[in-house]
Every structure is written in structure tokens, then in C-alpha cells.
Length: 140
Image (cartoon, rainbow, N blue to C red; front, side, top):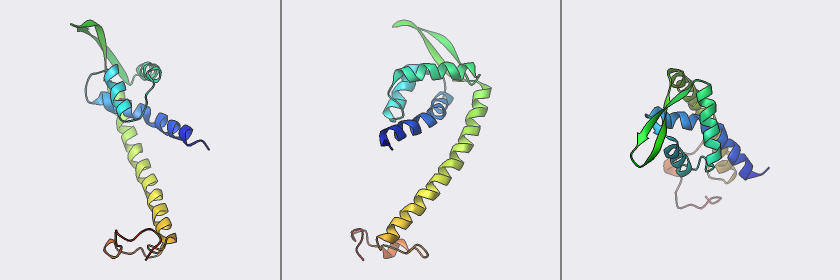
């Protein structure tokens, strides 16, 4: 399995959710969305954003308006529609459920690895106070 491909697929899976969140804060220009997504390491390819925005508009989740600019051509600002707000709420609920589920699995894996390394037992995890942060993994 190619880890880079898996990372790209995971980011693509939440891209629409992140875009709707950014737009939910108020009218936003596409380059500002791109900048935030890039700085959050969600995406870096401009060619991905515009087709997605068009698809979301065609689905009725967002709309746009043109705003005159004093420093150049008019700018297209995106905003959520009522349908988009309702969809974002549903996605938030799904994200919370999915996030809790994934975190539960990862936490169990972390506890299992700690048990294998002799830091605690799977059946009865040691309280945090009993585990010394100076003890290297695998030593008691």
C-alpha cells in the first residue's frame, strides 16, 4: 500500500466538508479558501477546488455573488445556501461519530502496543501516575 496515496485519499474524503466549513463563516473568495486548505495541508492543487465548488453549487449547497474590486476584475465570493447549512450540520454529526469511532480504535491500538512493550496490561491499564515519563518504551 502506498502511504502517500492513502493520505491523498483521506484528504479528498474530507475536502468537501472542510470547504463547507470555511464558507459557513461568511462570504469567501476562492483564493482565500485555497490558502486555508493549503496551510492546513488538506490540498495544494488549485485545479481541484474550482470543479468542486461548481459541483457544490450545482448541488444547491452554495451560491456565489460577484463583488467589484478596486484593484482589478470583480471577484466571485461563495456563501452557503440553506441546503448547504443543513448538509454541513449532517456532515458535522457524521464527522463527530466517525471521529469518535476512529479515536476509539486508535486508542485501543495504542493501549495494546503499550501492553506489548510492557508498559501496562490490556486488561487493567496502569494509572497515569504509575507510569514514569522518563521510562523508555519497553523498560519497567
